Length: 114
Image 1 (cartoon, rainbow, N blue to C red):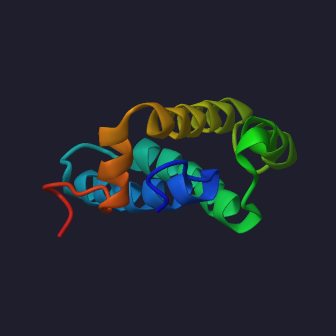
Image 2: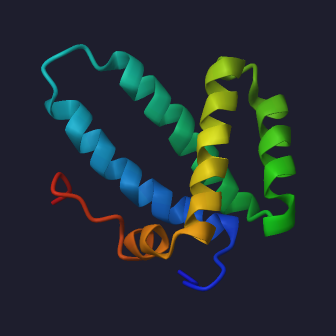
């Protein structure tokens, strides 16, 4: 990952790695985690499309809006928009907080991730 000024696709790739740790935690929970699995699936699909399309940084927010409009039939529009806002906030955070960017660059290590 470009530590200085990462493209949205670079951040999305790192967020996918972090999502894998979340999936491990979800599977070990004793409660019904079906809603978690739905949210993780929606986020994974959005991140994978961002990797594929590789939008420019200055167009990322518009790309997210277009993605939501184009895919609202596949998922609840509320869930999709909330996920897009979360991804946008993570991308902005990666630009503002060097420690977050470094954590992502190192594969988003977690005690839950083997």
